[in-house]
Image (tube, rainbow, N blue to C red; front, side, top):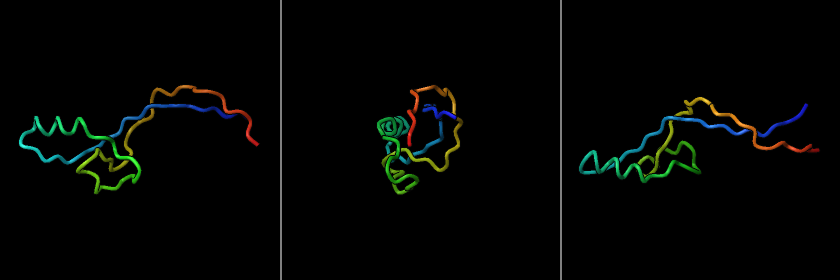
Length: 72
């Protein structure tokens, strides 16, 4: 049986907490925030990055990248 290296897209729900003087300002600040990296599910980051409570997305757009060569 062969192995295949596949790639896919996934969309998940994320949130962030923003302190701002208006909704417009909050949206502008939020647009510039990164998605959490490193400490996955560290909710202490919610004030500086987009965080995820649970992986609730669906896999889509699966595509073939390149074959995996036999590994011993």
